[in-house]
Length: 336
Image (tube, rainbow, N blue to C red; front, side, top):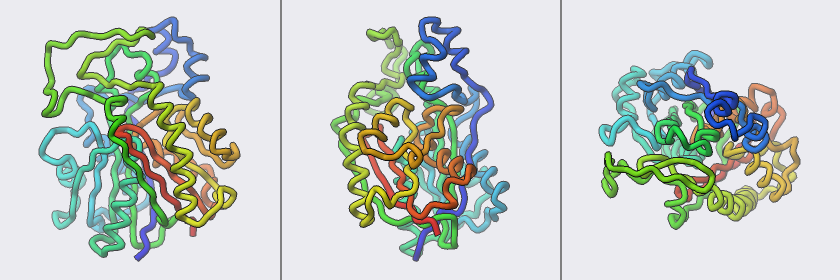
């Protein structure tokens, strides 16, 4: 049984952190410099009392309204986040109740970052192919801003909060899920990490702030990213990932009409595009007004590509997610 992406919607919080506001706080960090390096003009930041489940619900409600979807037909909910409301219960269970979904559905959380949307698509495809579900609601929602130290200008500049809701169905959609490839390498785990908060390192009030060579401030309960190592990882593995999905799909690079990669930052994306030798017109970027929204970057970009009419005339698309874990995944979409 085929699995198809039927519809996508997304939600961005009301509060906006512009480059001008960052520049006011960090005068040495010029507006033009931020835009040129990151490709980001603004990021949306979740309210103090707004959490991943709240944003996920708002994204799903937009999905139902924008695409005239009957929520009673949802029979499985997948929720991807690294900032859940609680350790337990499962946030997907909370979302089921808030959305008024049937109590006969399956619902689960999975913890992945920038590769999470592609992994979620694969899980949805498996549920449909195994005839365990017909309509899977995949929600990605992240509030990384709550992990970032107020004086960490590097991470503050890159990450924004967002949620996306995607309906994967056995019924015809705008594209069909085809092949998938995956990768995992835990040796890079400490290069993108929030160290405190789990069982191994419980949250402590006795944290000393550390200032790095660039003036960024953080401690063990904040998000730490080793930018150099993450850049090196993507430069090594993403070209291999692209070749692997092309080979598995029995396609040449020239057969692909549109590539939609995880929207990390403009500098990294352009580096990857040139290294893989993807024509600029076939490489979609949509992060200027929302930043790096982790697991929601690909569905947001795919929504915008569809809105701009770039998907309608395609036959083959490649999605690729990569980052924290290390974790990476890619898939081939076929436009019917």
